[in-house]
Length: 255
Image 1 (cartoon, rainbow, N blue to C red):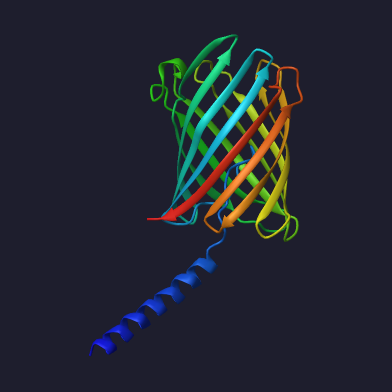
Image 2: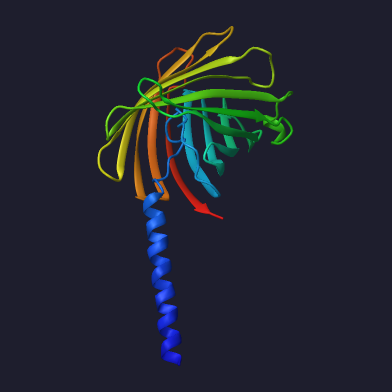
């Protein structure tokens, strides 16, 4: 009797592994909004939490720098066309020997898929966030709620290469003038686990001078649910930061 029970348990466990393995194969590898500045149009799978964690060092000029760590983008898939988003960051700023640190205002938002890729029409999604002014440290709080949005689009050029771009705008919570955002990046799969990209992006305020930048980076896929990234870039405009360096680790799990 005991042998029959053990055989039944083993059979059940074996069938479970087959079913789980089949599901894992059908689920595509993790798609992240980091390390580039171009947000991807892909939605997190249903009932999955995805955490995209990073460290960034930015040298603004000879007297000013900023460290943001951790920066955490939390995403949760509601269905095939919709996800919820939460952005939390801890910032350390060193400006002319004046050091301040604290939690940046929290952003809450969503991403929704608009169009599937078909011919010249790219895979397209809409991302919207709003800054909660009081949900942060006193040194970094804004006066008003501050929205930001962007349309994110991607073309598949080949099995290994893609072309992605974003257009949008953001507000700083202090003034009514928007800053327009643009990004353009090309990603390439070097192997099944290693990817790279090069990107041109910038910020165009309504009144002040534009800020154009260039960056590049690599990603390493440990397995379909875990990814490491490294990136860096530099400014192209007089008002741009000198350079930045970043590391990141992203993972997802199902609840």
